[in-house]
Image (tube, rainbow over all chains, first blue to last red; front, side):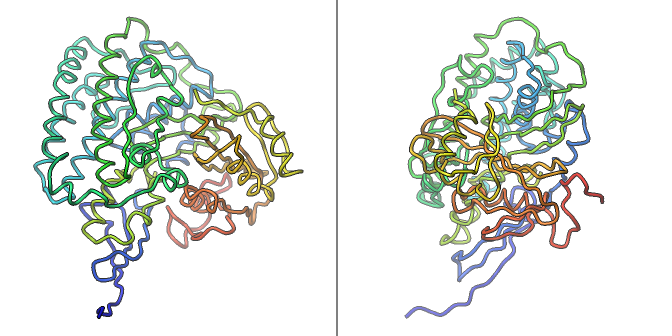
Length: 367
Length: 147
């Protein structure tokens, strides 16, 4: 005979170590099983879209740093590409290569964070996270050489990048990408075939492919469900059509696949950077142009494949020095659409790890 | 490369299935009447040749005389994309039919538009504020918003 229980509603967050920032989940439990979930957003809402309406096109680059603050480079890239599309600016080839190199480094840094926190949320407190942070730190050191900043980079400009890479950047980059495969092997050795990880992640939080497409999921979330879609391949921007790489996909759409797709993507990023280093040639990195970009009246939407998914900016220009409207298509935000479908029916301990595997950053969710 | 389906081609196809819905069209986009928006988008999603199964984003822009909703759609199978726009002329209670029944991905985005721009989506399962708190005065992304 089943024991009659009453549902209990609990607030998880906004102050909670596993909510990746300030995120609140109102969860209704029946015993230990999740029966309903209601995400509450907005604790980090800074009104970025409104602020952008009062700043010049170059100034907004600094606002984009603070969206997904663990992958500022990708945010910069998405934004400046949108401005370039609107204003019809060309980017010198060397600038494009530098952009791709830094965006791929950023993808690795972001995936390291995602993997490290996933382990943290499985209960491996501290140590595995620090392994991931150790490698991310070396990527941040490279960023420091490029632009002097480590997190809020603002390295890109409409029409190119801020400055050329210094001489010491290239040997440091060579060392890093030489050693990175071994680091990833080491990390995989700890996780990929780990019995506890497998037991806790396989078949948990499954997103079927049709729901993934209907729910506008992008990035590793979409690809883990077996949908092979990557903007870098589907609609190559910058110089992605000149490099060879594969799009790793998962088959089950579960928490494990989302982790494993990220690990494989890091390996592809190394491949891309290696080819970029071979192909890059001397030349200018920034087009000459006025500091105050004045795009013609009109609108443009440009998107890039960020670490979290499709990051797009929809800009509307009225011919002035600041955009009339700047809409951000934030992958973290839209990926949370299916959160309820992923969580209902699982237990409290699974909730933490499923939410962790979506890899959201609240700066981007709340904007 | 993702093929951009020209708005004029789109308009011809829409006119055959949802007569009278297209207002204007040009090389990049098609603009449709707001009361026929849902039907038009359903056609774009379900049509075999167009197959826009993926909703990239829903945006709203305040042009003062009217609000404009912008739908970016992609066909993952055919690697093509298109832009559909629709204007809402009411300022007090702009209302349009929700597309959550077509694409789940619109759920949070429509809530965000309601919160920041004040456009109501009929048929949305959970139409309430998302980023700001209940009781916040006004909709801050409107051009006439004053703190």
